[in-house]
Length: 262
Image (cartoon, rainbow, N blue to C red; front, top):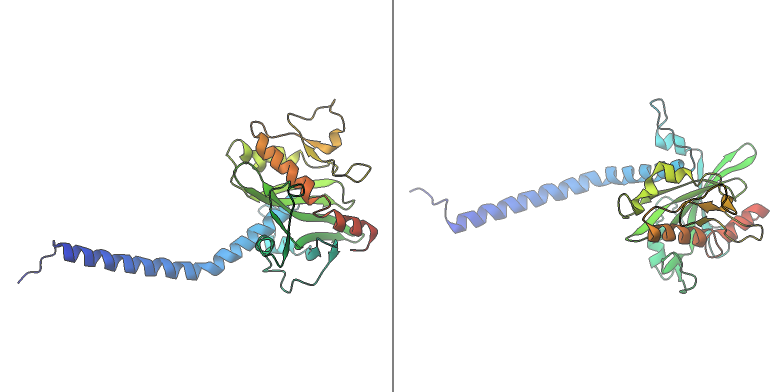
């Protein structure tokens, strides 16, 4: 007697079996690919650090990203004291964004302090140093802050004087393509090179202005063009620069570093 393969019961059984098989395949693939995904994410993180510092070689003859990154030294700074710390046992896996959500590893920011829209700031931050025969060559600092639609995450690189910008770049954001998304535009990023962070009295003077910097702009060495049509994203970049290079961010560390006491 032939089986009725057009019955509702048979259709449901086939559908369930297909769902189970597909679930097993997807779950297995996720587990198998997870190590490769983590490795690729780590490489991309290093690539963005190198790019912010103007050190990424993408030529055909270039070394691997891991080889290029071998000259970068990673340390952890206690943002409360501005000094290096060994409080983080495993630097490689330390996630400071997760730490910022942990009340035991972060501090709440007041409304006046929280210009970057972070809510809480982690106690410990990674910093990335490039040295040469004379000592410090470049310093790359992680920054993040809220724009229009998203939290922008990236790096700002400074020269050995700890005041001159080498470069700035973002590796993660959700801003509008063609508007706030222009933070990825190489032309706009190139405007940051050579700009000065601090005024003579030590305040963060680096500012993203509305409009363009011209030959007649006063204190042009401290100013960068705003993003056309993206005022809120521009304000977000400006605020995170002022926060992370200010007293609640890396300023205590930079001051200690200048004095040789970090």
